[in-house]
Each structure stands twice: as C-alpha cells, then as structure tokens.
Amino acid sequence: MKRSRGRVFLVVGGLVTTIGCAPEGVIPSSGQPPGWDDGIRLPAAADINPDPSVVELNLEARPAPQSYVAGRPTTMWTFDGMVPGPMIRARVGDRVVVHFRNGLPEETTIHWHGLRISAAMDGMPDHSQPPIQPGGSFVYDFVVPDASTFWYHPHVNSAVQEGNGLYGAFIVDDPSEPPGLGDEVVMVLSDLGVNDDGSLQARDSGGDLGTLFGREGNVLLVNGKVRPTLKARPGLRQRWRFINAAKARYFQIGLEGHSFTRIGGDGGLLTAPVDVAQPVITPGERMDLIVTPEGDAGSELVVKWIAFDRGFGTAYNRPPEDMFVVKLEGTRAEPSPMPLVRRDIPPLAIDGATQIDLTLTQVSTTPFQLGINGVAYKDSEPLMADVGETQVWTVTNTIVFAHPFHLHGFFFQVLSPERPLEWKDTVDIPVDGTVRFAVRYDNRPGMWMFHCHILDHADAGMMGALMVMDPHSH
Ligand code: C2O
Ligand code: CU
Image (cartoon, rainbow, N blue to C red; front, side, top):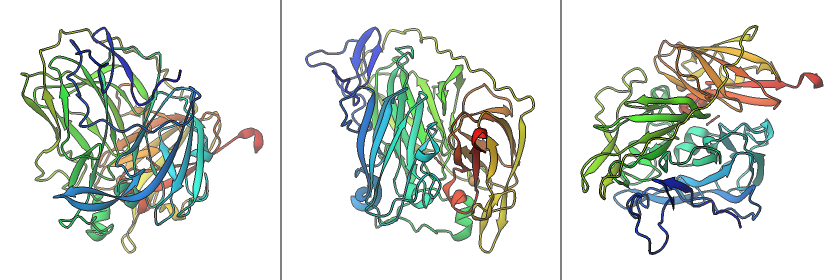
C-alpha cells in the first residue's frame, strides 16, 4: 500500500503518531495538543500516481481571490487557488512529475529552487524551455537527488508573479534521518503589498527608488495567513522548517525567552547543530530549526519578525511585527534527549580552482538598471564552466543594499567569511561585503542562472547566466 504523503509519520516521545490527527479514540498522552497544527498546516498536493517512488500531480497557476484587508477580496496569483501553493513532498530518489497549466494572463515557467535537476527542467525561460503561454502547459519531470527544504516559484516577471502569491513548499525527505527531531511545521514566509480597498499595490510603487530598496509588502504572511496560531505542548520539541518566499523582505525571527537549534539550511542537514538566538533568513533561503516551546499551559508566545538592517534605512524605525502565535496547552512534556544530527560534508578541494570575480553594481539611473560587473542581464554574456570543474566565486557588493545571491542548479560551500560548513544555494552579500564560495559542477550541463533574490533587483538586471559544458561534446 502506498504511504499517504499528506501525513507524515514521526516518532514522538517514543510513540508513533501522525501529524495532524491522532488515531481515532486515542488521546495522545505525550504528543502535541489535539489539532495542534490545524491553524497553520500547508495543504499537500494530491499524488495521482500509485507508484510509491513517483509523485505525480496536476498544478495550475491562476488568479484567485483571497482576503486580507477587512474581508475585502484581493485577487492574488495562486497555484491551484491557494497561497502558498500545495506542498509537494517526495523522498530522495523519487521521480516527480508535475503537469503544469498556465491559467495566468501572461507567460510563465516554474523554477524548482535548490533542486539539483537537469537544466531542461529548471524553468529558465528561453534556455530550459520556451515560456509557457497563457492557456499553455508543460510537464516537469525529474528525479530529486537531495533531502532538504526546497520551494517552487515562477521565473518570468518574478517580482510581480511571486509577489502576487506564486510560491509553494517542496520537501524532500531522507528516510534514514533520525526520528524524533520534533513535530514538524513547514512555514512559507512572505508578504503582500495591498491597498486599503484590497487591490494589490502597483508593481512600480515608489518608482526607481522602490526598485532600489526592494519592495516589501505591508501584510506579513505565514503560510498565506496573517498571524496564524500553532499549538504546542510545553517542553515538547517542534521542528520548524522555514522558507523565505518574500520578494524582498528579510526575516529575522525572535521568540522571547527562547533560542533555536539550527539543524539544516538550503542543502539539507548541517555537519552538526548550531544554536542561534535570532535566525536571519534572506529571500530564497531556507532554515530547519528545532525549538522547545516553554511556558504555562494556557499562555501564548508570539513569534516576531524583527527588522534586519539590509542596508540604507531598511531597518530604520520599524517595530517588530507578529508572525504567528504559539498557544501552549497540556501538561509539560518529560524532557527527551535530542537525537544526534551529524552529517559528513567533505570540503570541496579548491587547489587550482578557476577564480570568478563578480561585482554587484548599479549600471545606470535612466533607465534604472542594476547588474553584475557593470552589465545588466539583458546585455550580459554567460560565464563558462566545464562539467567536473570546481570554481571559486568571489562576489563583492558595491551597492548600499545587501543582496541575497542565488545560484541555480548547484550547491556551493561558503569559504569566507568563515562559518560552519553547509551546502547552500543562496547567500547574503552584505553592504560593502565580499563572500567567497566554492562550487563544483556535477554532470548536468546546460545554461543556468544566478541572481539577486530581491526580485526587484533581479528584474532590474542583477542576474547572469552560466553555461556548463560537457567537455566530451566540445
Ligand atoms: Cu528562487 Cu532564480 O530563483
Ligand atoms: Cu539585490
């Protein structure tokens, strides 16, 4: 029998339970409170393929009304009528087939952020595939090679399409991961720019200065909801997997009286957990955190967004905002030791690696253009690399705003500034900062992209292409 992918089996305090519902007639004696994640859980995509190693689904992008402003409808752009879109869940090595239909009034593609799949399935318009026309469709078909928290979003007119609500979670599970890490909640973080009458803010609000700042929405969303509630049992671990799908907003997360244990990031588990008081997640990044909510039953904890200074006035005079509420219920759980989370990540050998120097720049003011090495994307030539090659990229920021820099298709290892080793696909390049990372191109030749994940910046030209060649076919 096929395992239901809508529910995830976890071992909690020695009992096997399912997230979302206790077996009928059984009152959990040591689990989370009944219905603990009902107010926040992402709907799962329906798998239409009975083969246990194939996840197959239909997915449609289409406008649909949602309501955020005093009951007034806002026409957002959605996958299957939902914001975020349905959560896709597979196991390492599974084949995933997505029958996608474009019900939007303009062309689009889907990019599978972080998944190391073939260039032909990466959703890069005009290279992977022609953009999908309104009413058109495309079948994405690939095998998922890595376990981690990923996500999907369009790659055409991105600030508008993603900003209007097109994004969804994509989790790849590793069946050999130690059980008992904590009851899992996947949370897609975003925001929405909406006017008092419920209409979406203009794409060019604030003009070129708005583009330079990166437009943040005025309504903060967690799984498409304003200030949702999650229940927790005091003393019982939860595992919060965050995805920052906002088009410009950085999320710095604070929970008074608590700190977090980070076990994973973009590219799966870390070599060892690290404690972090207020995690910062840039647009595009993911973070896998363990938290043990503590407090009296009946009390509420509020998880806060705390302004992070990503440059020129971006944190000025901005009070914390509520993200979601954790309502404590039940007697305090007996403490149970955290399972060992260890992963061997061999550092990439960088002797003799090709050096690539990139500078993030403003190209022109009229028209307003950003770029890389003084060139906007539309005028740029692709970087070149060979399958099997290792390169060291040095990315320097010359603009007074930070840029979350994302490379498609390949994980990299940050060399400096020094930090715990992990696989990443998106990294913050701070104001006046330089980040060096090493990347090795496995055997997936083709055209790939790299860009700032502040989507106004990407759309304004801060994007480039990378051609990975198979040396045997030169
Ligand atoms: Cu998530 Cu090219 O991006
Ligand atoms: Cu940027």
